[in-house]
Image (cartoon, rainbow, N blue to C red):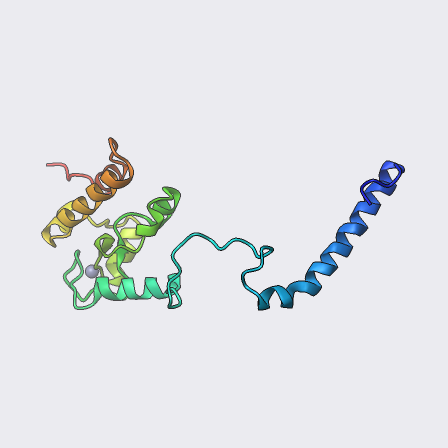
Amino acid sequence: MRRAAPLGAGAKSLDRGSTFQAERRLLERRKPLAAASPRRAADPPKPMRHRPRRRPATEQEIARDWHELVCRSRRCVKCGGQAGPYGHHAIRKEWMRRMVVLARHMWDLDLGVPVCAPCHDRHETKVDPITRAELAAAGIWQRLVQWARLLDERYFPGHAPVLTRLERDYPMEAA
Ligand SMILES: [Zn+2]
């Protein structure tokens, strides 16, 4: 087909198109056969990554467990009431996603702050944000700093974007 006498450009592309479609139809017909013999050279290469035997948890399941573990039997860092149903992400998830390598740490338990729903709302709407002093009083600030330093060392040697972000989001209160 490729060596056919040159035709007009339009006719040529039309010819190629129909050949392509014919090949596709052939490939589609061969699918069941290819599936039956897994070692065929025509098989697409297997991705070089670890394949867990069990179905990996969906993000929704991970999120549900995260909120549960962050809040269960914990007191709200602001008012001391029962925390939950949703924990607070000390660093915004959107920022973690944008930092790409940090996306996999988005559900680290170290990142979770137990809060009650009304205090969480008041934090998110900036009416009454969670402060560094409140986090420190609950013993969470030091844990967060440690977590941030580990991530900075691992992914950004010589820089400290995670710690910088944390310190910016929870500034030292003016004396
Ligand atoms: Zn509260």
